Image 1 (cartoon, one colour):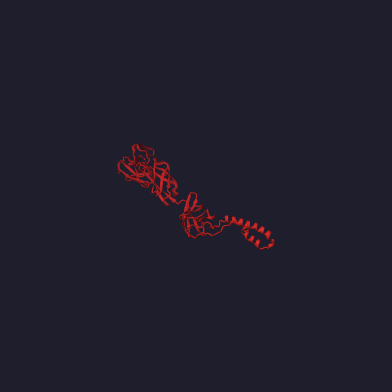
Image 2 (cartoon, one colour; image 1 turned 90 degrees about the vertical axis):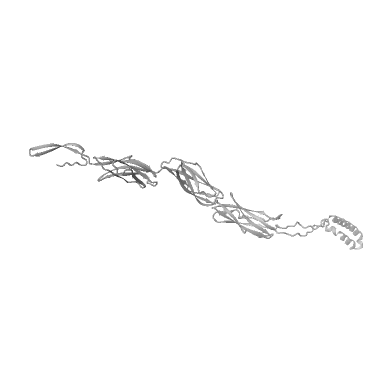
Length: 419
């Protein structure tokens, strides 16, 4: 008779009764039976949950527990390890316990994982589970909003730099800006900061235009983080002035014209008022040239094209003096010819009328003589010319053209020669 115990049979001692029958005859006997656990082992991990951080390691003790009078040695192995995690053993094989050390690289996959610890001894196999959690080490990252800052020469731009906690980081980060272009300075709102800080980038009026990459560094103890932002420095909206021709020769009494161009710069748009003035001239210059833009100012700029205005430069001609005789006042014609008339009256009529004509002649002669005396006393008799006009003084002049639009004021120069 063979007694077979299943894998789940109750273990321990038992009394088994054996009965035999043959017809009406029967007989029995009792035997002592002991059901034993087959030789084997189990495994246990302590601790059974192991947290580690990237770049660090942690350990757990794996114990071999004998079952059924097992006395062999067990070879241990770890499987289902996350990417970037390796396992090393203290004693392997072992008949008692062994320390398993799990090491996570800096780039190990973060998060929970179940590592299987397996023990093998001949045909016997046992396993246990080790709950592993790979954590990101405490640190921080930086972010900028916006990440591209545009400024113009002589103005400021801002960006909010945020410190984001990673892996339970709770410290404060000290911020700094590096690789600033010439003419650009950086200032911070709150520094160090545990949250965010306002970065102000100030470009001087002479800062180099173009695009630059600025590095933002953060530090907290041994922890560091960095990022980059793009800074675009632009020319402020303005305009330029030019005159064509910029050198003009004009003869006295004539005029010349120069075209003044207003060219937008940096997206400028608006009205530019033009004025012109003589800023240098020959010594003791007289009758200076006159300058006029007429209705061509202001120049209106609405797009990328230049606008123009016409400056008319006029000079004065010289004139020579003419001899002009003044009036001889005080000798009327009727008195100047009085003597002649008297003679005619006395000599040109017959004798019979002599008496009354003589009387008339005396009267007329007396009046003529009186008029002659008066005329002699009042004749100025001088020939005086009017003042001379020499026209615009010849020589070199400098004309400065000024264009104004809001705070923007620019100039151009025209060299004038008067011949």
